[in-house]
Image 1 (tube, rainbow, N blue to C red):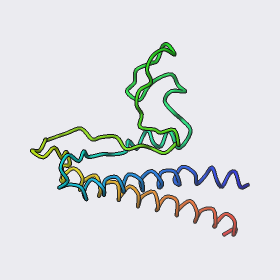
Image 2: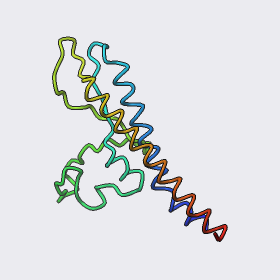
Image 3: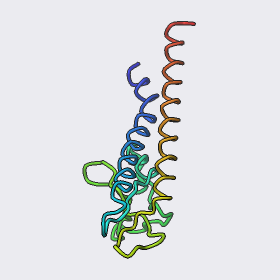
Image 4: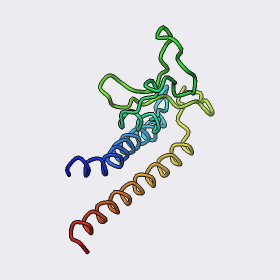
Length: 141
């Protein structure tokens, strides 16, 4: 029974963890908007979730960009994962460079911060809905 409960809630638990990590990275970008030579970072949500769920792209024989590894001698693509299993932030592509070398675009960061926050809240609502359904089933109502 415990395994079924864990399986039912693990997806949203992982999603909340990755969204939380991403929110921290975006907040750090915003906080360092005026720091010379600071490079904006972000977490690739899709690859982080695949890693969290144990579905790495390498097990299927393809990389994150859709190219197949046909030999073990080929270099693995950088999916942003570390040896500890936590998702490592990747550098964001520079949209418009600045004189001081800072790559933070406040419009992009604000949009990503709000979007990620809304998705975090949606995951919370979904997990709350699952818990309510389980309670209703347990209580027999």
